[in-house]
Image (spheres, each protein chain N blue to C red):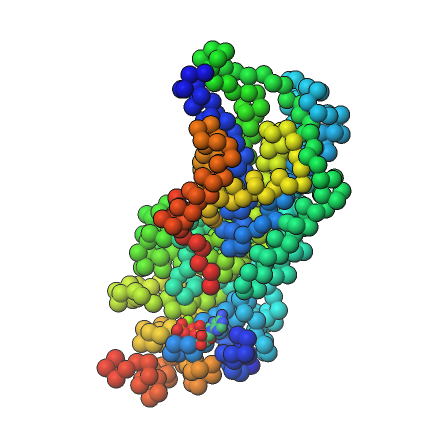
Length: 312
Length: 234
Ligand SMILES: Nc1ncnc2c1ncn2[C@@H]1O[C@H](COP(=O)(O)OP(=O)(O)OP(=O)(O)O)[C@@H](O)[C@H]1O
Ligand SMILES: [Mg+2]
């Protein structure tokens, strides 16, 4: 590979990883935008999503990387896995909100945030105790076809990477449409901007909050599936590092800011793969979090400066 | 007799207001007297610790805010409180949130646009960038989009230039003529008492005076405290 091809390759990989981080970052940002709550349970909703998707793939008889599907069966299976995982994770998020967080709504201080840490640990321990501690080989039915840019020695785009881009573009486009255009989406924005005023317009705030948790968690489920297909493994511990990077992406983009989380995710993905190529994989986190610290010092509201919503 | 507390703080102390259909009733009072708290109690943002809020013959103090909006009570909030990153049109849509879109929505939109041609011009502007006067128009328009039978306004004249204040009060009267009852919190007593039918004066959570607007304009306490000697002429 020429240096240029190498760079291109890392940009392609970074965009794929970045799309996954963006999906995960959106859940942090949507919930924060409405409740000013950093929801650490989101980390492990992502992890649970990876396991749910694995279960569904097993139901289709897909084990390891030996069963490959093509054409319509591939699209069908992936679609079912994706939809089931997203819905299941969505409900998990709604249950967490309803039973762990709603009782604490309006309580001042860090109580709700600490509760989300507790829920996060419960989720990871339940998976640890029921699924075991070892890393699991992830079932993956996607064939290893690739496209080469500039010949067989050039940069490579896999079918799976294209799938990642298509799926995440559709999901993020759908979310954006929902928030901008639908009635409930507008209620969501209104609640984020001025909860009391939204209430007095007749917005059912509980429904808005439930929707936010459902959508954020559903996207985390999609991210969990993509993560595990990408790295070919899952484990009860995957939520922490991926979650922390996605959270960083949300902060980079200005937490509460939906397009900001998307761009922030892409940036984190690019940094991770470029750092892996040109510095060393093990330094990726150091670089990512140094950039986070720098951004927070220089631009506390994130790159795309969204002031935190003012609550009365 | 309504009492409202914030924690241990007793804000409204045995207050009693009455508003008949079609009236403009004004609530005067200095800072921290409990005017906004009265508004919030009517809208259901805070619950009275004792007493009753009766609307169209029905006790509504236990109802959720949504239900009150559906029954035809709409707010114009203190300091406007538009959704700053939403467009003017989206703010108007939020006013009609509890109602279905359709012919009625379009009619109401036309009504708002004909009362405030300026709002129509600015409909795609992000509302946080509007001038204070424009924001007030949108805030009143947003309340009208709920097709309310009662509008509760919290200091509609706040921060407006004298010319705007006059225009705003004209519009409030116009809305009232179209059949909407108005409950209005004001510090600008001189203007408010000109358009109101009746008024209450609130002081540290207690109603110390009430009567027709004409009576209160003549009242010594009101003239000293709220009209000022200079503006008291007639
Ligand atoms: N959420 C709250 N929690 C605690 N105390 C509050 C709260 N809201 C208002 N208060 C207090 O209640 C009292 C009455 O407040 P309120 O907002 O009703 O006054 P107001 O008459 O509207 O004053 P202004 O003319 O300044 O708007 C004040 O002393 C205020 O500090
Ligand atoms: Mg007030």
